Amino acid sequence: MPVYEYECAACGHRFELVVGFAEHDRLHDQRPPCPECSSHETHQLISSFHCKVASGDASDY
Ligand SMILES: [Zn+2]
Image (spheres, protein in one colour):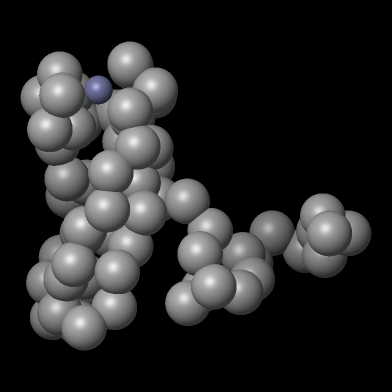
């Protein structure tokens, strides 16, 4: 099972989430709440599992 790392924009807490692929599809629409402050202002960090973001900017190395 892939592990995804998230960071909370509200309190800066980082947490990991183990999700199946079906679950991950759903997370595109509904972000997981922060376990520390329950905020939904969370975003997924780039992990080794996802190597590229479709932003057109590949110079961030
Ligand atoms: Zn938080």
